[in-house]
Image 1 (cartoon, protein in one colour):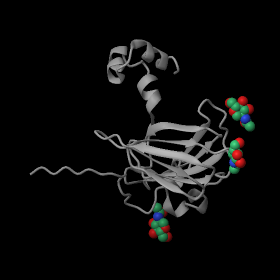
Image 2: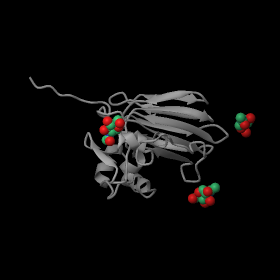
Image 3: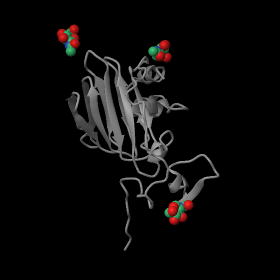
Image 4: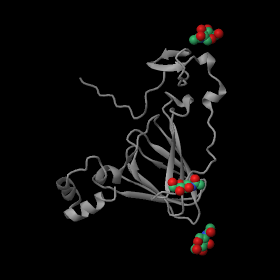
Length: 205
Ligand SMILES: *[C@@H]1O[C@H](CO)[C@@H](O)[C@H](O)[C@H]1NC(C)=O
Ligand SMILES: *[C@@H]1O[C@H](CO)[C@@H](O)[C@H](O)[C@H]1NC(C)=O
Ligand SMILES: *[C@@H]1O[C@H](CO)[C@@H](O)[C@H](O)[C@H]1NC(C)=O
């Protein structure tokens, strides 16, 4: 009998924590990771600040997602979690994208967001909700999702991820903005449109 094990989350750590450390003199090797000596960890290793600061949303899509991982928050390392602050200008969009390795819970702090995701084939059902401050919405792992600010004011949301490294694939960038570009033959057949439509889309990236 052959048994396949599939893990839907990051592996569980074998120690309390593994605070990332740059200083080679004080690191120890635990569970295949370089960690700070646990006896030398301080409260600051588990602390992060500045999440109240609005980010600059002056860009073509009017939104910015600030991902916070163990790279800038050492105490998160090996815990299987990460989070983000997402700022939206009025009418700003967090464009359709997927996280290949994480489910996401989005919590709205300020503003009004139209959020949704699309189920996998064959149904491709669109599931959406208008979210207000205090509301949460979950985006299941791997599914294409988005948020649009439909309020008059800027909006702020926080997102938590079930992986230390959720990954992000923006659908438009990946399909019509790849380097080198996907061939016209592939894209005209996939979208069932003329070559000119594809060239126009590719020209945007
Ligand atoms: C951490 O402290 C404990 C208790 O004092 C000690 O037993 C242990 O060896 C120390 N660990 C390291 C890596 O120094
Ligand atoms: C926001 O970003 C835009 C474009 O990069 C820049 O022109 C503008 O000065 C920035 N605003 C602030 C307040 O930093
Ligand atoms: C949003 O804008 C509309 C139209 O200008 C206005 O009627 C409404 O009062 C505004 N809402 C808020 C919360 O400012």
